[in-house]
Length: 541
Image 1 (cartoon, helix red, strand yellow):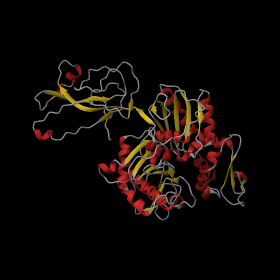
Image 2 (cartoon, helix red, strand yellow):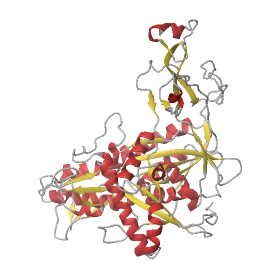
Image 3 (cartoon, one colour):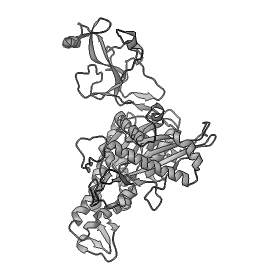
């Protein structure tokens, strides 16, 4: 199945730019929309500091001792600045893998701590600016747009930002603020509207559909997308809506997990520390990451890393003619934590899906590993599940899929992850046991009635059943105990509730605003916001 796009129906030229800021590598894709022309997705293949063309650039930033940005991408990696986030002899500080610090996990991960020189928002801002500048230069120098044409559309670029499945409103707000700080959008409603977000899982689904899902193998009910990146894994489940090939629904809550592939680097450090090759540890680690990690397949065969000249030989360290020999069994141990994390998360998604999964698609930079592919195929085949990898370079999956998300919009409904609602008060009801327990918290409202505050009223639930989503008077009498299942929310569905506000003056009613709150606790029908501290969170939309 390949995408059959329609010509762009807009009246003027428009540029869509997606930025995939990954844990270890990042990329940019774009589409220039011309009226009456079928859109084409392109990827940036030239980044500042990279001598050769590549669709990805290292996610790295290097600052001087005064906090000024020295270099980014490959340029930051090539400057010998010591280990990540540590000052070198010139006082420079390097930031890598900073994406892993955005959303805390439990237990804490063994990842490099961040220097307090820069905060997370600034790091994202500076790297987004770097990606944008590289994209701007690439688009203009390749002849896609002239200087004058660029100036005409640069002020109205629509940005698509991809992020891990587990990121929510708070993280999206941080990304939007980073775009403002990078001076890529203005800090107003129009500027904010020029930024769209897509999960890496959904972007990867669009990439797979655009590349062509193998229709000779029927997709019985559901498919799962596994986006294995350099430091995170995003797993999402989808199914077709009816007989159409172009509309999908989400069939499980997207899963997100972190794994860090530092095992190889740790091994090289432990083996070569204190030897004549101690200064080559960093280079050996980078060389392993670029080729042997993806090419390795057979645990019974060794892996070789050419890192030095033919004159370098040390049999005790398995170095021969400048080449380090790694036993296959040693290399497999590098993969174990990541492979276990992927299998575990994948099994959890399969268990949570209401439909049988018959196909899994593997994408992402780490997804190019032959050993990972073989082990996953073996794991899934026992359950009768087929594993596929698109033919196109997998490290483009998220950035190109994000553009497809904007152009093609295959996913039409998603699973409600949380219960959404609003804070309210109602007249005090002495016949209600829960009201009587809170009798000391009553107050007299503007309408003169004794009332009780701090109550949560559901607007959108995780549970479907007899609850009325469009009632006029807030009530907690509806039962949600029957027919429990995930709520799938169509993009075109509106969820409404009517509320009343009382005030002592008309001026107080001239403008009314309210807050949407989401509940992330374990109750199916949360009612009182004073019972689970930390479970009711202001939703940032």
